[in-house]
Image (cartoon, rainbow, N blue to C red; front, top):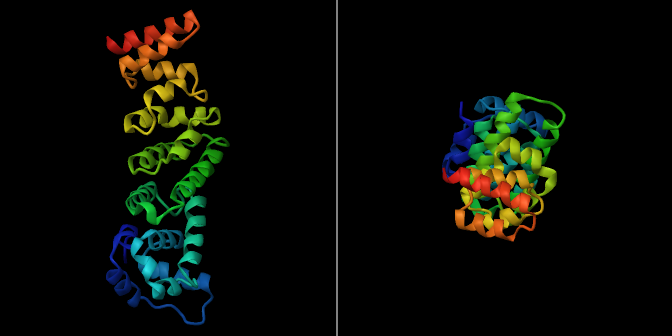
Length: 241
């Protein structure tokens, strides 16, 4: 038996040794072969695809790729991506997902489409959250959002999309505004000037001390509404008290 984490992190030599100890019927179809391999290793098929597919060592191991029933790494990556996006805490646990985010974050430029991949997964989770209130789903989602930022997976394009009005409710659920500001992926003044962020969200960030006082004061002076200025001043005073 081999853990998901082991398959995700082992070296090329170790991965070859693991696969050399497995046995799968030579005439089985590819799905049956993957099922056999997963059972022998003690993981689920989705875990197998994601652990092997996201392990950077796999790119140069054609024998492992073919053992999984794929002609080349691109074909494996395509199946891996579908499994990663589609599975919401069924085969992949939240810990599995966070481990994957850590690996993708370290891979950097070697995973050029990682931001799009992560965004597609998050969109899938949010679509399910809109249909049902599920505490397990909400808890995992919140951890995933933090994991994305902590592992450097939030590109400027990703951040801009997350700051749109369409994501306001989800940002609130995940405490995402605070995470963005704490991680420094959005400039505090740009956050305050962002049209997609509500005045209430901005005041809350000021009140929580997430905006430097000098930046908040500069923004408040730019407001044309005296009522808005008053509300923001109260938030700024509350942050300082």
